Image 1 (tube, one colour):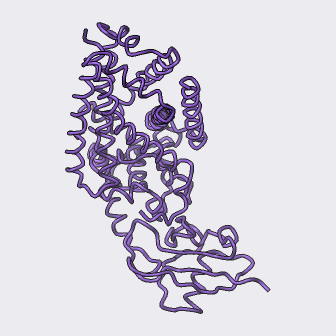
Image 2: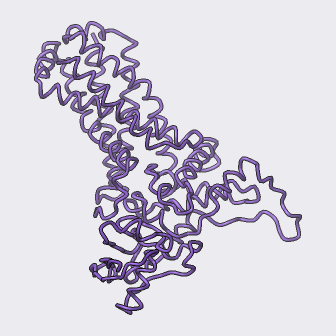
Image 3: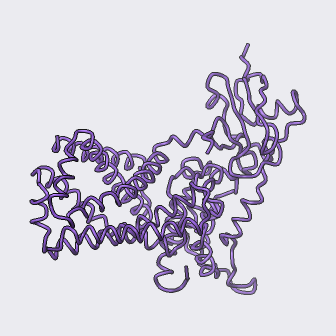
Length: 109
Length: 240
Length: 115
């Protein structure tokens, strides 16, 4: 870990703190209301607000998780720092792709 | 008649085994007394390190019942549950023999973290006037009493997991120098502690702070380095 | 990793390990979560089918576990961010325990609501 990776990881963490709180509130609300897929999608479809919220969340989470995974691999697995970094980048890109796909799935009409 | 202690000592180097000795228990006895007794009366081939015997030099640090401690300042009565002691060399350092470790890697990391004062003036200049209650001096003073005993280095999981990591003591010393107004080497120092193995590898487990026999707080010092490093990086004074 | 040293059971070491493991588990969960949501691309029936599958008690229990992981990772992370960006405060052990307790409460509230 160097200062550049550290700054990206801590920055995305700070960005996500309020996002996670909102997400937990959403989870508690949706489960309390026993929302069906139709209930959820009727709220998210066509919503610029939810699109922006979750797109930001996906971007931040992908960066944060991939740097975290890199650190764990570098410290706890026999992989070299370079290999750990490579795996982390691939993992981060996969999260970005799957994440944006998921956002599109619930937001696009 | 006082009891006997059952004392297991590490014999060998990286490969080796624990050997057990029976040591007479005394009223007031330190772990260093116990190790010394074994070497003088039971097995002269035992290798161990000490110097002052009174807790000011840091030479006698060993792993005692699982924790790195100064053996001269550890009373047997405080640690020998059930009359048993297990004593090994400090962790995270190569073992020379038995209870003596090679401190060279520790001091090499000290140098890599730029834990050395870089003077900005000569003997011909007037003495620098440093206010003892300035925030920078207070921060430096809080961390300055490190005597390089290696206990924090042995306690640190990140040192164990990450071969590049400088460790708490070198970074703590770097922090005192970052706060030293007379020092002129801070850009290079911040660059050094911002690289791979520097302060950003610290996960704030705080084992260093919990076990430091001088009651220093390397976790806080490293947090301070992280702040200075991030500011310098964002301002473009250092590069990643 | 030979756990020969005893200080590794201390509260703060445990907090760090919980933080790391929760992050790992969340990282593994995230792609699955995204794939489940992506089911809506094929129509809401697919997503609804999944939501009904997740009505099983064991799945609900696992979901509570995930909520705990998310909360504990957030609160532990906030504690680290405070250590790193503000003046030192003693009492980190207590803060770590409080973070774990609050996370357990949140997960318990979730569990009660979905059962």
